[in-house]
Structure formats: C-alpha cells, structure tokens
Image (spheres, rainbow, N blue to C red):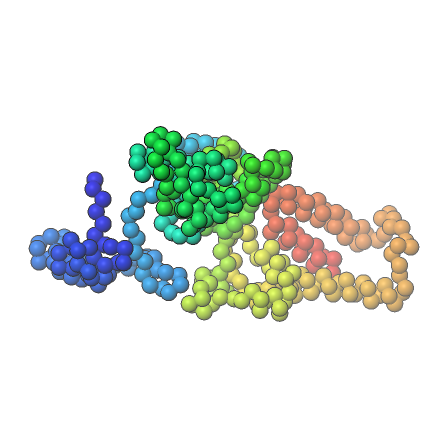
Length: 383
C-alpha cells in the first residue's frame, strides 16, 4: 500500500486535503464530519468517551504519526524468549505466566529507532552511491573503515555524523543514517554494557551474569523486563535474571494514582523528616505484598511505627532500665536454657523459629511474610 500522511509534522492538514489545508488537525474534525455527511459518506456520528494520550508536561493532546523505522526481528526468537522466561522465578507467578508470558508469546518485531537528536546513534552507515549498508561494532572498526575519524571520537551527535566510511562495495562515501536508538535498548543492554563487555571485564561479567534478582514496577512488563530478556536472548540465549520481584504502584490514601496536577502527591522528604527512613521502609515491607498497589499516607506509616518500632523500642528500654538498676552485665552470665522458666524457654524457642522462618522467606524473596513474622514476634516479646 502507498504511504499516505494527511497530517503534516506541525499538526496541520496536508495541502492535498481539500477545504482543510493548513488547518490544525483537531480543529478540522468538525468540518470533515460535516463534509462527509453532505456527500452522503458518513455512516454514523456518535460521541463517546475514550482514553487519549496527553503530554505529561503541558497536558496538550498528542498526535501519533506513522513513521519509517528500523526493527529488530524479535518474531524469529519468540520460542527462545518463551523458553528462557520459564527459567525465571516470578513474584508473583501470575505476572510471569500471564502478563509477561502472554506478551512474549505474542511478541512483535521491535521498532528500535527514534527520530530524535539525543540518544545513542544507530551505528549503521549507508552508501550514497550504491545503497550498501554496514553496521559498526566497535570504535576500532570505525577507525579502520573511516578516513576522517578523530583519535578521540565523541560517539554522539553531531560529532558521529561528521564521520564517514569508505564503501567496500563501490568505493563511495558512506554516511550514518539519521536515527537514534530507543533508550530502552540502552536499558536492556545494562547487564553487559556496565562492564564494557565484550571488550573487557570478561571474568566479572561471567561471575555476575545472570543477576540473582531484579525489581521494578508492574508497568515495566513491556519495558525493562522485556528489553533485558530480549537482548539477552539475542546475544546469550538465556535469561539475564533468575528472579523478578514485581512492584505495585504507590497510590494515595484513597486508592487514587498520585499525580501532580491532582495535588495528591506525597513529598517523600516530608515523611522521611517526620518519621524517618526506617518507618517508611517497614511500612512498605508489611503493608501488602510488593506487587499489590499500596495506599500510602503518613498516618499509615505512623501506625506501623507505633505497632512495631515503638513496641520494640519500649521493650528494649524496659530491659535497659532494670538492667542498669541491677548493674546487670549479660557477658558475665552463661545462658543455660534448662534453668530458665517455661516462659523464657518459650520466647527463645519462638526466636529460633522466627530466624528459620525469616531466612526461608527471604531466600524465596517473600519480604512481606518475613517482616510480618518479625512484627508478630516483637508483640509476643513485649508481652
């Protein structure tokens, strides 16, 4: 099919659009509908509410364009993506098998380029004469093939665009294509790119890859989770992570998504200054499983602070007060459980049960169960 674009890049209608040329496309909507009706071409006109993308900075409606793009043919490795995902322990399993697993089973080719200035330049050079293309894989290769590459080349625009190659096919001049790479490709390359692998640090990379676990919000199903898996499958045919802890989104106290324009965003520094980092951490550990949405408020943090941290501190303070009165030095005494009263043996038994349980839960990346068990133990200890 021919590529037809009736809206220009400035958002106005193309000169070929009769009666509406030059109008902003949104302003032309009503007129286009009237024209279709007058010409007997309008089947139906119904107002309905639907989601629409708006700029997150200025809240104006966005316009999507069909563009030419470079793709990575991910459909060729669909089966390997699915197989590698089955080696991962997902927390919760439903995301790995459902949302993420379904995404991989229906994977499409990755539109990997963007028409922007900032970003990693796509390292493909094209010959103006014969159309031959070549992908550069290293700075050393670039210097070998280029007659004008500086010794210390800056690999971003505009500097990289001033470097040309000698075409190996016809001897012509090759120029870099204008696109940059999707920044998610950079993110997905992190496991090896952080070590400048494969150019150095082979031992470090081999020791630390794949990662024991990664953690991000549920909205990264098609973002970081996917791009990590996609690039690792293409390069190494294995998953780049062994475990994934999925995080739910933090909502306000009424369960609404936090948004600056709604005015319901909680400034974390206000809570940290008022109640401290430990109280905030403990709230997130115990409020709900990490992958469930959490309703955040300073009142909820205060409740956890009172129930757990306050109880723990008061228990310790009670012990210190009487130990100081009696001049008690625990290092001068040997603990013999057989001589202790039943209630002391019971709390020691509960302590060791707690240690075993917390170790077991943390090995399984279940921080909520571990933290709640500690909370319950502190309550028993205080009593």
